[in-house]
Image (tube, rainbow over all chains, first blue to last red; front, side, top):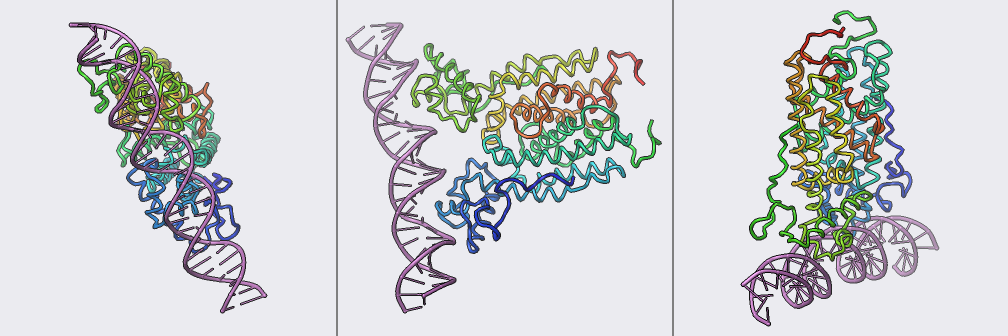
Length: 238
Length: 238
DNA sequence: TGGCGTCGTCGACGCGACGTCGATACCCTG
DNA sequence: CAGGGTATCGACGTCGCGTCGACGACGCCA
């Protein structure tokens, strides 16, 4: 999981000191106002813990950060911009956590896949409020939608590459186009974890979520839950 | 796929006079106003084709149905109530389509599973606007969330029962608790189809979606894509 | 020291959507 | 034609939004 383009969203970078005008904020918030900016972010994440973004007014955010409503607009152009900034940091965090887990896949496939899924899981879990809020506005907000899509695309790509590598070394049988399979599996993870974290719909208990997902991944990729490690030919198989 | 209770949402009842309180409308729309009710529903579904519910005002709905905004409230208590009514009918439609497909599973597992997944697929597809809108408000609207959860629960239950039957007759190996597996697979379907229908995120092309999903289902349940039919012992296997 | 810009702040405005109340007008049925 | 339910809408108050303009505080140059 190395590439996964995180930057490259127009306006996502935090140029703070460097250049004016590039930040998500609407004007360039100069030094002192920096704390306010953070205060707004913190307030948003706190409020999101117990109600959806649509039920949080800009006034709430402003009050929570100790400023008036108009002042809010000095720092962010909208509620959604705040969420986007929050998502940005979560994504960054997730990206580093899951980085290059799949590079040593062949050493111990089940363990490595498990780590990757776990990273996914933790990324969602550690900021579940933000994640759930993003899922909600994804339809409406083009920026959130695109950022999320980019992240997913990164994971899907890494997964697909890993699957192809496993097939090439003979550990996994041929089958579905690797990318299609990767899309399906990553989608499953997203939805399952979403259901697990919101209480919404049928879900598996939080503690076994990773195991259930891993099992489906292994069966779909290897047609067994015990794929052989290294490049040696099958040994304990059948 | 028989159960899945559709009626019985608390808080949905209309506190009007006495008898005909089965509709989602706020008061009982007597004879003549019935067309208006339908007109509102139709307008809603039409408008949802090209913008999210949040960008459709009650005025839009009313105007589209040829009535004034206050009059809208004579028929529905809110925008969400309209969506809920729409979902109701879609669900009903889906429920009948997918009914008892899995009863004859053993005759030809891949074909039957495929039918079931296809039914799921068509249910989403034929009213994609409504489905996508529901997905969006699910977080905010308790009624939609619950109705959806009930439907999913029905499918999950049927799936789990079918998996257990396949295991019992020896066609599928033991493994994950059947319900957990069923949750994961149904979740995958939901998310994959959602991604396919909205242009959101990584997705598989619409024409191969069912095949991809089916493949993952078969591998997860049977550890092969060619499970044997009937109760006869393995024959063309291995 | 006094002028000047810019940062950060807010009061106040206008807008649009919402939900409700009360006044109709339009049937029926008796 | 009186009276009760059906169906409709005008008008109101409220609330959240986004913007504009004014005002104080600070830093910097002359």
